[in-house]
Amino acid sequence: MMPMDASIQKPLLGATLQNKRLFLAAFAAVLGNFNFGYALVYTSPVIPALETSNIPTLKITRVEESWFGSVFTLGAAAGGLSAMLLNDRLGRKLSIMFSAVPSAVGYAFMGSAQGVWMLLLGRLLTGFAGGVTAASIPVYISEISHPGVRGTLGACPQIMAVLGSLVLYALGLKLSWRWLAVAGEVPVLTMIILLCFMPNSPRFLISKGKDDEAVRVLRWLRGQNTDFHREFEQIKESVRTSHHSFIKDPFIYKPILIAVLMRFLQQLSGVTPILVYLQSIFQSTAVILVIYF
Image (cartoon, rainbow, N blue to C red; front, side, top):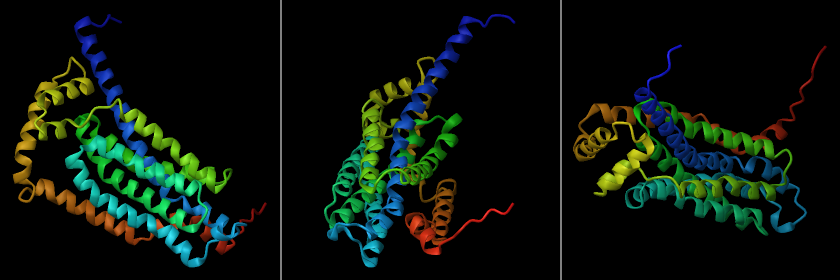
């Protein structure tokens, strides 16, 4: 086999480095989605434990169970609406980092709860954080990614949310409900530490007139030997025309309408209540699996 020419090898090494940095930034961000999935189903193993609690102030009633499961979605709705403002004011990265504050405080409330009101407040705060991350992370990932990996990385937020739910169910077999809340702090703190070293979205920087910083970010993400200047010009032109083409361009609004409709229909299927009350559902059905030989 003939040795690879040095002039060809150098750009390839640059391309590899580019994806390593991009993947690291995407991983740091999607830890927020992991936390969203973890927090969403936190009630599944916790409600049965609280029903038999020895502490009178923590012995949960049916009405309180309903609020404990559903108040998360109220917080998520508020967080999603707030993200529209936060994304434009703080930027995508700082919005994701901001979500760590209500999330960490919410887990602290639930882990140290001495009354049902602390559980409800903690659940509301983690829901708010989940709403912010659900609205901010896909935007951040799409804006830092190049077309070659944008589709793949765009699927990561939902995958990580499902993985977070799976980890919660698995930990629920071994940990008490208080320690489940403590364990929820781990991805939150890991996310905020990693994001401290990650760049902001080039598109956001350009929209704020920080062109030099946007060029430096693209150089860091793409590599020194890539045509990041051309991408910078493309993003700049896209930012300039985006405000005028959103309503009129079917290429933009049709996929958005389709995605919103599909998401709406998915929620009508009732998948969220099933995930939230999964353990209680299985216990109430008293299903016994018998193996016949």
